[in-house]
Image 1 (tube, protein in one colour):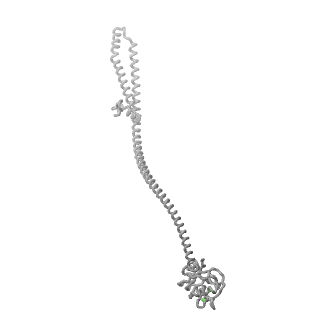
Image 2 (cartoon, helix red, strand yellow):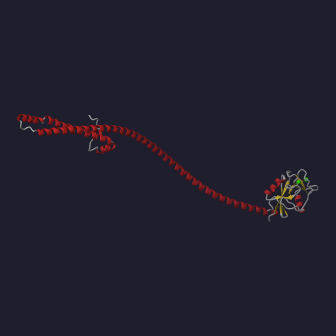
Image 3 (cartoon, rainbow, N blue to C red):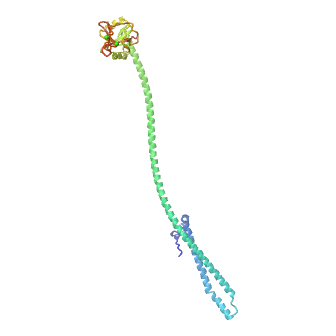
Length: 335
Ligand SMILES: [Ca+2]
Ligand SMILES: [Ca+2]
């Protein structure tokens, strides 16, 4: 009748068991609760109106009967009809009617407010549904982010584990490297000691050889002499002597020259003019105290910058350095 319907939850309301749920329902749906209250109030007001109207009608229908009887009796009797009581009843009837009209107006206003509240309730319900949808979406996003966060946490844990393993491997490699470095230093020390012992043994061997010269070398005076069995250029021959801690022979006396002549081969000696033509020098930089050039030599025919000793004539001759000859090395004798 008033556009108001009770909620099913109210129809099944049980104060003993559902008090907590009802309080929660009132907190979550305040406008619906207000509408319910207004509807109940309207019902009470209409009930009051009906009761008052019924009482009035009863008074108007039934009470006048004795009044009319009194009037009739007054008319008839002309003595006991009281107009004052009639007026009091009329005034009371007007007041009740006025009160009823005001209650009707109030009820109409309440119905209008109820309709407005219903409309507001629909709007709020729609808005609540939209917010619920948004809330659901946010919940899903939160769950997805939580899942992603869990996955990232697991990956981070795995990476941390890998990092720890790599750190351990690095530490082990550093320890191994340190040990190897120490071992290398120890081996270098051992190698130095062995090299020193080898050199000492070489020296002992040199000194134990005849005349203080190594095996294969011939002692003469304070020097040792080595005659090659093969032929090489002047530079290659000198390099071989230097590899033996010696150099091509430097001749400072005829006696030494005669000793070398006993080798009976044409041999390279440590004499050259490579740096400046016709400026002959010994390989040790010493000055030429002796000149035993063959007559007509050195003639530098064909760019001859290196000297050979010719045993037949026991003289020197300049020839191209690229020619191959035997050679004689000379070193200091060790005593
Ligand atoms: Ca020359
Ligand atoms: Ca020549």
